[in-house]
Each structure stands twice: as structure tokens, then as C-alpha cells.
Length: 530
Image (cartoon, rainbow, N blue to C red; front, side, top):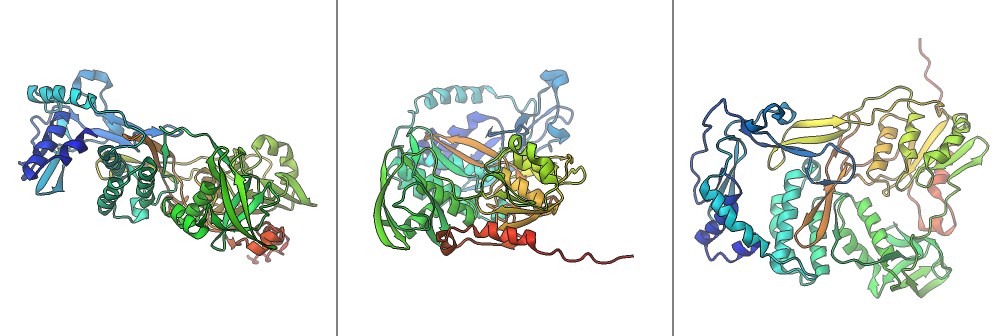
């Protein structure tokens, strides 16, 4: 925030260069800003310890498991604790040169000797002068000022630029997006508009894990007593606790605005694949400020009607499905992995082991039963490496390779040997896609429905000055061969089945129906061999 204010006030190139030097020179040696750059800094002694930063993934606030860290190669004073990150030797003299525009260039030295890395008296004085200036920066208010809004973009753009592991898959020119992102934040006159500006920024990254949460504005939230889905390009009610809003009703207006317009905006401000953007829109429409109400215009089989619903339930109603763990017919079982946990499944394992067919439902987020059921489907220990954390050694994604790992599952008795079907769609994301990755790549069952969200990799969070918390994927996930892209691809069905509005109105679950038909199909005869 302080830096944005300083550079915005610069009258010309000379003033801009002076402002940037005043801001960055105190941060350490090896930073140079000006119309031209001097010769690269030389190493004083080849025998002296080198100082550099090494990152294992984004060294930010992580959501769950460890494995993310940042380390500075230690000075000689640390004695026996000195070590180089992952034994990756820093390259003496490594640096990055940048064209800043406006006739200015910058150099940041990435590797220094221990002696060179120590601040001199001039830098110490500059740093001492900078600290009290930063202390005068006010805390962000409810309506962030221009400097705060631009600072939010500066921070967010840079975190994605240097730590997002999916630029190759996303195929986005992130450098070209900076100016329009700044322009959008510049014109955002309210906190809500600025939040939308940050949502547009993360949407540009095409990452289903990317999102924006306002941590300063606390608001009690609740859900409508209906559930929405995008079917046939329209928003449709798929579950309802109120007779006035029947299942299968198509929503045409939402609080006086055309539903198509609302859907387009909600998807545009969501990040990731089209199917995940639709899911985000569905969730956005169903949630709101507790006890607030919304006017809907819906088309039903009996005609168009107006109704008003209130955000007054903790969760929207569930779509019509069989009981979470039930025998649909003799020898054919249904297990909803989104509504049952492994403690509930375990007592039925012996019966499931002898079942003729099992339908596993993962149209949503799987519970712990997702990973545990895989152990009863594999026939040998596996050591697939499909999760990868970058070993970052420089800016702009400079990596010295990847640390790769997987779940290392081992089979557990009883093995489920019947005909196995998995139902899924765009609501399956992240951990659930990890489960489905095993099913698809190891041929543990037949996948029916539609493509999953196409977003996986541990979620990492970070804050921006204006009081918003942003997120991104911190781990790169591939197919189990370690190479095939998963990001923006997802798990595609072996048998594509798309629900219809007509089927929904008729009370049918067309995806489940197709799975049962698959289980009853005659298996092709095995090829004879010698």
C-alpha cells in the first residue's frame, strides 16, 4: 500500500526510479533499479558459503498436509546446521534482470556470498527510515481506497505469477493480464466491486481452487430451501423443501434479473473449467445473507409462477437418491461415497465382496470412504507418483525439478470383485478427483456421468492488504503415469450420461439408471489364447 502510493505520485521516469530505489534498496543487497544496469555482481570468494532462497512449493499458508517450506541457505555462523535445500547448489552470480517499462530496468541478485548478503551502513540506515513510514499506513477500511485496491492486485498477481504450478496447462499470458486487472481494481468504487475485481483476477488463472474470501465483513450466511443445477444451459431446481418450487422448475428470473444474465456473471467471476464454473454458480445462487429473501420467476410443468424464498436453512435439501448404503436389487448394491463414511461401509464389506455389482456414487465430495474403498479394489500394492511439488530456485517458476509422491495404497481384504460402476460429474473436485484418478487410471471400475471438475492439488491461502483471503492450487497433479495432464481436463466418463429436465420432472435418476443397465449388460467373452 505504501509502495503504490509512492510510485503513483512519481511525476516522471526519474521520479519513478527514485521512488522504486527508495522502496526496494533497503530490502537487501543486490537490488538495482535504473535506466541501465551495471555489470553483474561478482563472487568474492569461491570458498565462502552462498546465501539463496529455496522453496518447496508455495511457502504460504497451506490448507492441510506439510511439504511446503521456504529455506534460506544458512550462513557459516550456523555451523553444523548449515545445509543446502534439497542439496541443490546455488549458482554463483545467479540473478534476474527485468524490463520495468517507462525506460527503467531492474536487477535482483538471487545468490550472494555470506559477506555480500550482509547489509552495509547505508542500507541499514535506509531500512531504519523505511520502517516507521510503513507503520503509518492505515489499516484497510470497509471501502478500500485506490492504493489498497491496487496493492491487492500487486500482491495477488505476483503470488500467482511465481508460485502457481499450472501455467503450462492454463495457457494464460499472465503478464498481459496485469494491466486490465489493475484497471478493474482502479474503477471499483465499493468493497463489493473490489471483491469482484479480485474474483476476476483469480478467474483469469483458470484454477478451480482459486477463490476470494472477504475476512473483514462478517455476515451470517444461510441457504435457500432449494438446490440448483445447470441443465441444458438453464438453472433448474433439482431438490426442494417447498411445494411452490417443484423439482424440475426452470428459473427465468432471480430478483428481477434474467437468470441467463446472472449465470453468465457468476461463471465469469469463477475460476476453472466450465463445469466447475457452473457448480460455483449453483452454489452462489443457493447461499445468501441469513433471513434475507429472493424473488424467483420459475417455469413449471403447470405454468409460470412467481415466488419468494428465504435464506433460512443451514444446507439446501438433498437431491433424490437411494439410501446411502442399500441393496437396490438382489446382488446389486448402491454406495453413496458422498453421504456415507467408511465406518458405515465396513460392516457391509463382506456382503459387498460377494455382490454381483456395486454402484459407487461420487457426484459431489467424497468422504473418507473414497480413499479407503480403493484398497478393496486394487489387487497389488501401488507406488504411483501423481502429485508433484515444485522445488523453486528463482522467480517466475524457475524450478530445479519436482518432489513427487502418491498415496502408496496396499490392498485390503475383502476384494470387491463384482461389476463396478462409479457415478460422477463436475461437482467432484480435488480429493474426490484423486479417488477418481485411481479408478480411471488403474481401471478399477467403469465411470459414468460427466467430466469431473478438473482441479486438484493442495489448496494454499494467502492474504492481500485490503483484508481479503485468496487461494490457489499449490501442487501439480497429473495422471498416474506422472505426465498426462489433469488440470482443466479432469476424469472423463467411460459412458457419458447427461441428466435432462424431462427426466428430472419425471422423478428419474438417468445416470443411476444407466449404471444399472451397465451392470446387467452381458460381458463380452474373453479372447481365447494359447
